[in-house]
Image (cartoon, rainbow, N blue to C red):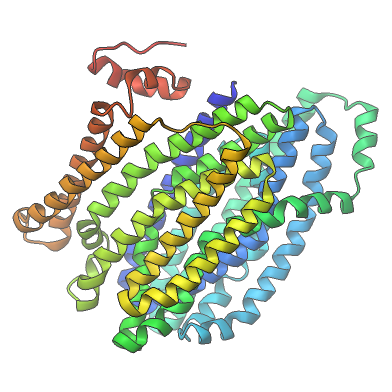
Length: 553
């Protein structure tokens, strides 16, 4: 399989799995919001965001570094070394999980108090055991990623989310009669059950791959065994840490930004609206906006996971031409697929909010803030997408110092802008600070990449067409939202009418965007012909309708 097809195939698998997992996550929020209300979603969000930061610290760097190391060694045929590195990484994961679980358990009271969400203590401790499982799961996912096998990772994500959703909702419902604190803790504990299910899936695929390797590789040459045996755990950990610490710092950015919001929102907003309403607005941000704003970045995350081993292999063989080609391709694909998702969700934020979270509609805080916060946070996702994909390319090239510098500057901008903007713009000041953080990081990444390889995303004409198409669709969506709000209410029920309005806005704006991309020649039929095999097959119906048969092969 060519590197081009490998990138797209891996991306499609991970994107589909992530989309299903994200959809299940959004579905989960519907009954949870109904059961816990915003008063419960605020401590739930605080617990989940703190857990997410520690999970990234425990898992994000090592698996990505492992993927890079495994990919480089298998490309050079050094399979014994790859296996030795994998086993040492698993041992590290067990220790890291124990440490992180203990940290989460003991910091729960102080963090909940500083966030002014005392109900979050039990929820934080309920999810702590998940940190015993996910470092091991993440190591296994990193190994499969390095072997360019994305199916086990995708399937485990879906299974994990199914068990998480069912358990979270069931426990929240069963424990609600004991009080809101216990219901929130039950919802958090769903993450532990999801982890058990995901680990079972990964163990199955690990056993299957081990048998396959024994059949295909045969006897490993003695010199390879000797080289692997000489590779001590200390040497492996030194290389892993050298690669992983910058990756951890980069990967933790998004969860750290959301954690900053959880930490600062109530203290900064309570002076203007009171503690109770500030908590409700925090619940909107963490329980509604973050779940919907995370949808557009699904493909970017999948692209990032797929491109790292490809870039690593090419860079290890000094194939800078392929590095430049893959860099331009991953950035172009992330923008062209991420931007329409951002547009349709942001423009349909009002009906999507009332359709998905209808039970909270009608309250002053929700009617006033929820649609706007969802739309604003979703817009920031396009900057996150560029930051994520450009950072992944730098990871594959081993350019770690710029990643650390970019994160440091970005987080500093986030903190400074939050304190500066919230007094003037309220919750939207936090969202604007998030956008500034991602913009700064993306600019630093792209500048470093430009100095390393001669990549090309779009020409000037295509950039102009993209800007025009985006502006035109934005105008169409705004007008359509006003018309739907006033005229499309045939059923007389908020959730049902909101569903119809959301379908109309998403369909029209999505179709208009694709049409405008072709009319402005940002996308052409020749681009469809140059797509890798899996996407060429999907594009054939469109090519036939436009009068150009798709090429085969």
